[in-house]
Length: 281
Image 1 (cartoon, rainbow, N blue to C red):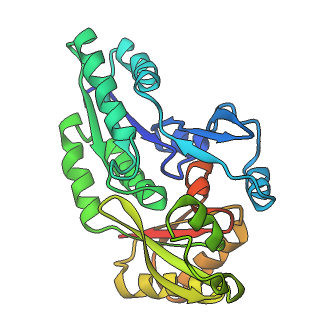
Image 2: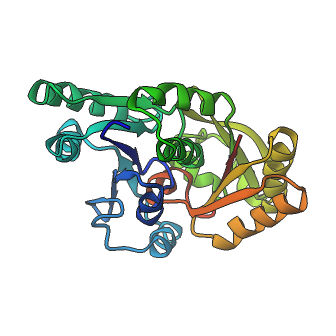
């Protein structure tokens, strides 16, 4: 196996601890709240629990990928160590991460002409990107070569399904995922938007009334389409919800391996507290 490093970013729900377990390196994007920018998982100085509590109390943070120069600094460490780079990037249609990383790689390859850098658009995010990273990491552990990964990722994406629901419809309005003209009655009726990712962009696929119906919607889609195997589950500041979704899937006989992760700050800035998501093949 050639000497390379597999990178992913916090557009996924990969935590530093889980990244270490997988043998991958995690690139922390930036989240801004209280008018200060912080690197996710590096210098936020705030727990996820407090992060989501602050949003409920009226804080509206935003997140961004690394700039070209920040990517150069991140990549340089590995190239200097004579390692090639495979970067599994959040969907290019929803973030400038791919563009910035590609520009950084172009500059660095002039400085390190004997090294290789491959930026792979995963075409997805959150639990979907997490699934891609996990499957790629397992191939790496089996001895996959640098050149194998585009095909590995292609195969995963061809079979990937993912769904999200959101507790706070107003949060989606603020973030532009829903029209501000959405009837205010939707809040009173506890309407829960159901979302997925198509062509690298988050899209609203349906709306249901109440959290219970939203959870059931995700389970029903998994029953229809899952081929078994791994299921990735994440929730924003609500571990009980992740455990409940896992239990519901088990009761339906869906999946035989489950990874439960907290929905991190990058996704949380878009979907808000209480959001949940599942991904499966």
